[in-house]
Image (cartoon, rainbow, N blue to C red; front, side, top):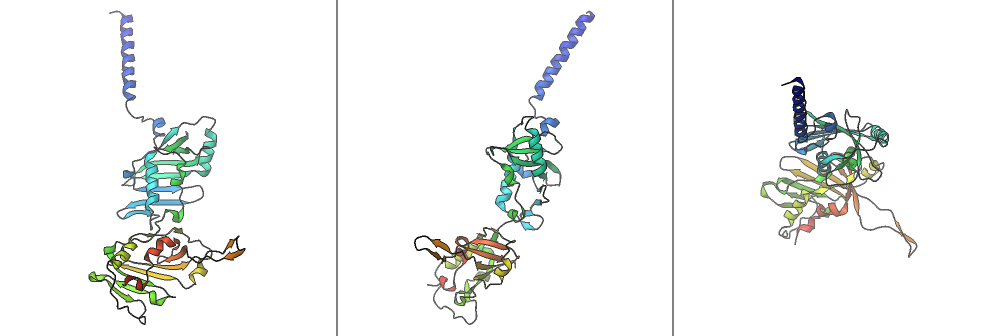
Length: 335
């Protein structure tokens, strides 16, 4: 076999090998730097810690524990907020590669308004770190970039279109669970409600040792001698399984003066394991509104919301239609 024929066979062999190699690579996920900087998604089941930081000094740490997610190592986190975040972490993906002309603006937006997202696994290993910026002009996508990459992308969530930044962008108390009471009925040992201005409505309910014992809160208040209506105690107690405030209002400038007022109601709940929860309610007085028919200002008579002070010293806004289900009077239980 002459030298020319050998060279020809060698070229054919190398070409075939290269073709099979490229064909095999096309069947597997990209593992190059270019491929990895487009893969933002992390399986939410593997996520045990998320650290968020923005350019304004806001820092948020969310950690998975046996008792649920914790915000900044201290507070129980809101389930819906955590759910939205984990959904974004799992479903985030590149929507498209921007044009070269658009890249400088995107990079500036990420540098100025970007939120750093660090995602960690069960053993503290870093699973992914990227930045989430502002939205596109049509609000259909969000600027994203992988840490260490120079290529920004427009991202989106699978099966959802819109600005995904808000799922990462909650601040402070917005991450916190707003539950006022969340006790299972079978775990409750005692409930008391004191109405300082309506003492005859105040009462204690003792549920220890299988009891359902109702007594006046104030010793001098007369005890009702009628039978308790069937099922009323059980219904009342179950109402404490989910009572949620509308929002935290710890920075309210009028908080000090409001707390000096006589509360409308003081609710105390003790669980059988000794945990205690309390809430003071102050009516939120609405401003008079103008009636164009009479030309007079009318003061609303019904209370639509309350300020609440919890036993952990949080100041809250609470809607009347939520809290009213536990604002029973002593006589409500009797026939």
